[in-house]
Structures are given as C-alpha cells and as structure tokens.
Length: 540
Image 1 (spheres, rainbow, N blue to C red):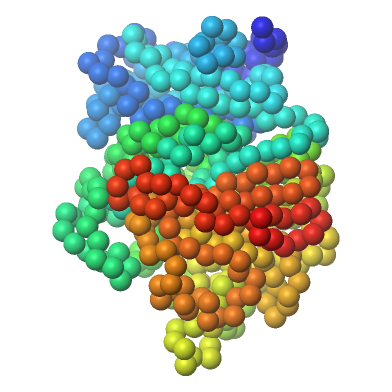
Image 2 (image 1 turned 45 degrees about the horizontal axis):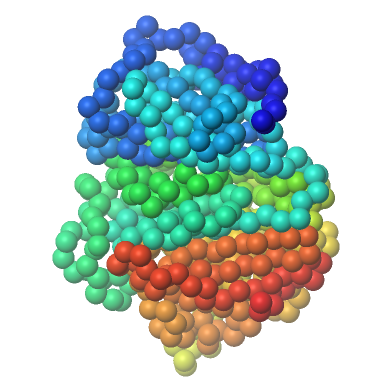
C-alpha cells in the first residue's frame, strides 16, 4: 500500500476551498475568492446526452509533491460554448496510486466555470516524490478516461536517469498526429511542448494550395475564418484536442508547455503583430488568446493571465540530475529587425537596445544557471539559438540569417553565450523548435570555434506535411553557408527523444516517413551523445 500524508495533501487542496488548487500569488487570489463558497447557480449533478469529456485529460508542471490535472467540459466541442449550459458545473476528481484506481489517495471537487470555458485546473500538492499516479474526472454520471502523471524526485536527490521528449508545431490541416501516438508509447518522465499548439489561420479550403513551393491539398480543414474572438480560439483548441492521438500523448505523461507565435498570431513580438495592427487592438487579441491558452493547458495558477500578461517562464528540478529552465521568447522580445525578412547581420541586428528575453527574464535565467547544482542544465525554449547563415545563391558572398530566431537578436544571444562561457558551465543543452525541421548542432560564438553549448531543434508534428527529406533548396543554401557547427538536418516530421544519465546526454532525432497517411513508420534519423563537462555533440 502506498503511504501518504493526507493532511498535507488536503492542506494544499483546501487552499482553494476544496476546489483542488493551492494558493498562488496574491495578485491572483481575488480571481478565485468565490471558490470558498459554491455559486448559487451551481449545477451539482448535471445530466449529459453524451460525454462532456470529449477533449480528454492532461497533466502538467510536475514537481516533487504534485502536478496539475486538467480537463474541459465540452459534450459538443465545436458548438457554441462547447455545447454546455452557461452555468457553473461541479466536477469531481480522483488521484490513485494504481492504474485500476483500487487505491484512491486523494479526491475532491472543482468547479467548471463558464467564464473559463468550463475548464478545470486542479493543482495538487502533498503527493509522494518520484512515482507515478493516475487521475480521472467525474461529472454527473459521466467519467473521463484516466490519465497518468508522475511526480519529480526531490530537488537534490540522487538520480541516475531521466527521459523526456521535445515536440510542437502541429498544424491540423497538414497531417495526422501519428507522432503524438508514438510519443504516448515512449516511457518518458515528461514532455516539453515548445509551442504552436494551434494555428490561427482560416480554413484554407479543399483545393490545391502551395506549401512552401510545393502543391498541397489539405488533409484536414480548420473550422472557420482566422481566429480573433474568445469563442474562435476556444473552438480552434477544441478542434485540435478532439484528435485521439494528441489526447493519448496528454494522458500518458505530464507536460511542460509554452506558447510560441501561432497560439496568438504568426511571428508576433511583445505588443506587435505582423500586420501593423494598432498596439491597443493587438493587446486585446493577445489577452483573449492567452485566456484561451490557459483554459486548455495543464498550467498552474501562477500562469493565469493577468492584465494581458502571462507568467510562462519557470523552472523545474529533477533530483540532482537536471535543472530545466523554460523560457518565453515572445512576450518580452523587441520587434523583429528588417521587417522580419531574413537578412545580413547589420547595425540594427547588433543593437544593444534590442532584446529577446527582456531584462527581468534574462536576469532570472542567469541567476538560475549560476545557482544550479544539477549535473545538467536544460534551456527549453521556442526558437533556434544556433546562428544558421545561408546563401541565397551560389554566387552570393553574403550570409543571411533569420530575424525571428536568436540570430536576429545578436546582443541577447551574445550575452547568453558569454554568461555560460564566463561561468564555465560545460553542461548546458538547449532544446527548441518552430523551424519545421530537425536540426542538431553546437552553439558557438560568431567567428569562434569554441563550443558553448549544444542544441536540438525538434521538427514539427505535422507542420510542413511530409516534407522533402534532404536535398531541397533550403538544405543546399544552409550547407553552402559554412555552418560547420551543424551536425544534422532533415525536413521530416517527428520529435526529439532525450535520454540523460549522470555522465552522458543522448538525443535521438525521431522521424516519420509520412503524416499524410495514418500509421507512418517511425525511425531514428540520427543520434548524438554529449559528455558532461565536454561540450559538443558526437555521433552515437
């Protein structure tokens, strides 16, 4: 039998008056003050024609004594309001120490409020460290599928191994979510989703369109126009979350999740979108999008949007083995240089007035790296840190770089790499995404060969559809750019699997042969090893 401290568990849960949420920052307390009393219009035993758990379950932000569990009531996911009556609903939850739910270690009630799209976030504490738990929700006579979560080891506790996956960019129209099914089958401790959970664009129609420079017929279609209202965003999340492969991956392991750009609008930066929308108008859209993001993700109360801002950068420690720093490279960045067109490195790109992280987040990251005593430091974020130069033609002598990636924020990039170098941190691995290809390589200072860290950029789940493999025009332009630090690159869909022990970090670039048909074949394109205190990727 599993032992646990029920008083400690309930102390954490009753911080929300039985709603299953622990106390958060003082600025958030008023948002949930009413939870101490049931609303007068609360429906305690609703009746549904079909299951309200159509969007599945999820867990996230694990710590040594708990995690968040999530669901959203939506018996008709694409209908207005998810097909729900616009009243608060009572939802019960259960945590078990076994997958058959023979031993329930905690249970309680939460309220699904219409103001939050009838989403439920239960923030648990007081559980045992370093072990799996199973959870489920009940509403009326309906019961959700079970999910599996896992607590982390205590910070500093000796650990020999951790396994996790890195994935993101899942454009619904461009393929099946086979990669999520394969991830659900992996024995991982957690997953990092780097962003682009949804795409904001309109239904592109059923005919042929261009995907890059290739003719493409959408496999699946978005519902509706480009999304702007809260109902639009909710419906788009609901459409994505009805996918059974995505639901399986959520139910299999806890996630740390961040947003990138498409959760709001392509390549947005702080208060600016790509269309020149007035700042006050875009801020309104950003606030709406952040509410919808929070509603649909297993996030802690500290990430609840307040005044159009969302606290999404945070840290987690896995025993003495891994310190993870999850960054936000959208909310605080300067607008992209050169109108966000790939460009040479010029005075604007080098300007010290331009920032990727903002002063507060940068200081937080540097302090976390300085204070870390873990054997490995993980920097998990959204866009490539390697400065990947490429030629536009064989005759060109100039190299151009992405202005949306760290290469477009040279001052911030140099400050980060210099800090790692000056502190002699030889155990830093970076994971990122957004580029719809696998990239693996070493992170070096410009005009220097010294390796500062290494980076795995995980390809997309579906965005870019089946891709071209190797040898396309982009591939040639990168290879002509003299990027000797780049060890592997391929335009296929999949994910990165990291297997970390006390002395080595292994990264596997997983790819599918197709996402345009179901059950694509999974393989490993390339594997690399990093040795602790010896920066640099080596072929496994």
